[in-house]
Length: 456
Image 1 (cartoon, one colour):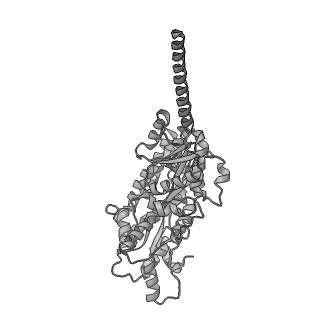
Image 2 (cartoon, rainbow, N blue to C red):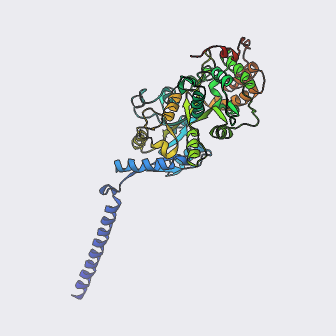
Image 3 (tube, one colour):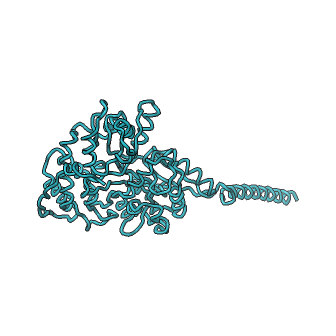
């Protein structure tokens, strides 16, 4: 009898223990099954390298997550060194790899060929030409595929001291508007310099960084072809032609009018001199506006400035600036492709102007409410710009052009210098020694001819 009771008691205890374990397991599984709770969120990581973007991305990540309670956006600031290599390694070996990442458009071919860039969802419909400039669409096009979202851009244009032009009109009692004094050609600037009674603090009517290709490329941008409109076709390369030679010969002539020492000049010093009122006209990128705002806030600048279209060289030779577009790329290894595309589109649909106020960046689409006409002018210039090419074979062209511009500015032969650049690039493209047929030097290229003619 006692044995039966003992066995029954043991069985009862076992049943109680089993029930407790089952209850605990069911309770644990209930908490682990996040589909039962609002905490069940898909994490989408976006990598970026520019800390200036941090406030904007964090702000938009929170707003997006609140509007879509099943998606959590995690912005991750990483080093820009070996960036694509780091993305590739993380995607292959780690759990915390990016679903999205931000990269300049010139690296898109490399990213796509490495399997790190997916063609975006319904790209043709989303990137319509009413909302996005052709430059933005071309910047993310590779082999007729839209492989990224154009996020923000950088380009250069003409900036002028508006206060000086207003004072000139008042002092000379001219019956014109400031807009009538804005130069449409470099020849117009020369003409302006001839008649301008400059204040004592003005050291140069026109000064820019002649050593940086970003501020010089507009001289040849309308006539130099590197990879076609999307910059992705190595069969379309035309660096050395009569028009680029002509433009560079005129560029060289400017050294006698604007005595700029290529050994001494740099962009930051030019911008500072411009803010200090030592320069009337310059060529600058969008960052100049925030630097002007900071100087005004510190009480270190009493001038008003404005942005204008980049001037043509002469009436016969037109200009186009270069642009770089930072793009949002959907990682080819992402397991959350739909959510990644959703957040990218959310950022590109933002017309609030927060991207500039929070990060100092300019959105690569129309319709943004900046509340500043100078920013709108920069966007118009960007719309007509030449996107940085993305072909791997031409990746060092910009360094070679930068050297070539400096040599030409300092007096070396334009024809020979451009020919050498072209041969170097074409040797890389074709994989064998390439020699250009020499083009005869253009004649009758005198920038001073524009000084005796009225420019439209």
